[in-house]
Length: 299
Image 1 (cartoon, rainbow, N blue to C red):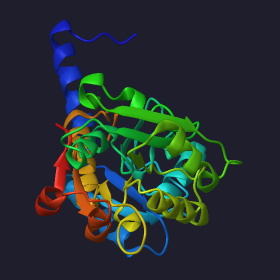
Image 2: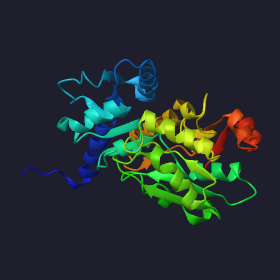
Image 3: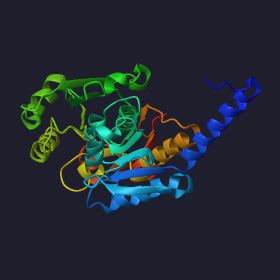
Image 4: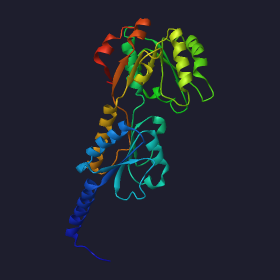
């Protein structure tokens, strides 16, 4: 066995550490994106520029390279890209940061991290408090087997005095057919719509929102698409691309500084707010402050 002089061991280890950091600093990041999405392509270029020396490559999820040995970090954007990487065994031992995905698409693991873009329950609860500043309303929400934990994680001090009633549905139940009974049985003042492919399809969601309008129960959403135009949700708190991108870039910087990817998940603590002023007037809700500031913070 070759023996090193004791005084040189520290220098040897330090040299190895420097070599590892130098390799990391010049290593490329692969950003995997869906096809036919100019918006995601633009986000990919922003992420590549966040890497040291702007070292990186954008790849369509349908055209992953035969070799991934040169990559130290994989970033996936959107559900399709995330699913493609999760199903490819070659990526099992490489750090993967996923962004612009709902919680339901995240697969936890020792080298996995994610920034979600669907819903921050704490922000929605604060939004409800601003919609009903002078009383404690009764709020309803439909959840599924993958989202039934969401509001249970919010601390009681943030919920305050209002009541939150949730009902778990499966894929065979139609929310449009259940909403009237749910509202009446629980004397609800408002309803939260959360993202769920198990509960909602476009037709059932539209029918349910119309029923809520007839019942004079305002709906609160997670995306501006459900607020803008027609009978839909009265207000939404949502994350625009810059908020999610900022969270992802911070994680990339941390990875290149420390050599490790944080395996915690996160979601922005600030959200944009959009209001349907006509529906707000119909429900006799004064949401002028929300319209004025256009955003809401978790804290």
